[in-house]
Image (cartoon, rainbow, N blue to C red; front, side, top):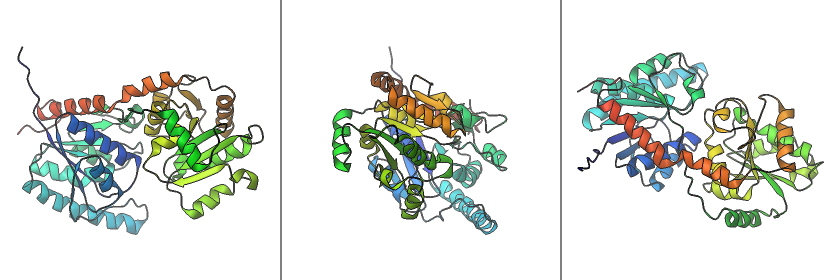
Length: 379
């Protein structure tokens, strides 16, 4: 039997800024998977920064072109400035694509699809828009027009559109974790947490939608019943923000809360914890859920956003009623009293979100678009 080898697809991933964030981590994992699947990926940034370092460490080719970076803004002046930047970037990206050969352009956020999607139209290059946010926008119809195919990271995110020619492909997660107990014990020793302590962890950037206040309030409420409870808050919290959050906790209980900052080695902190708590509202996907399961740790979250798609209540942890702090607190209490969740079940579940499976689905989508089965122009 003759084996037909799939041709390598040259993919450009353009970004409009270089910061730390979950979407950049997911994009870098996708790029790794695509390259393992035999494709060539180039990540293009307007500046050096945390994201360029992330991609370089992942073995992805990075190109830095002196385009203006675009930061989200809601005030009138900021919106006007961004509109000008989008126009300039559209012109420069059009010229860039006319001078460089790519099979497909993969836009990983809402900002890059506008200038680069338009440039793809002019240069007749297929464009894929990876939709990672759930919030609707007045210009979504333009983004949809520029994209040949949409990839939504969850069913919840796909509900952003009345009609969609896209598909739902969950984010990939590196699930090849080994030595969880050893890593956890070492990390606890490093940060001064006893092996007898019950450790909760919240992971994510400082964002109102992540509701870090709930985690601090939980420690305050539960410390009366569980003297050995500890909380790790892993994220980019400023000194002023840390003081603000700690003001929600009495002085004796503040010693039970740890703010390590933003770290690359998230896995070791997950290994050191007993459960992930994630009180976020309307989480678009929740990659951190899968990372927690990969370490054999259950999750307490809310029933909003994509969480019900990922976390089966009573199997992978608990999902409380959204906007109900008392229920969130009760679910943590229940987990501490009876943490019956089987780590092996959680780890095996996480394997369903493997890097290889995700990349294969995206490569198949590329093949459909390039063969004309997507909404792409045939050329």
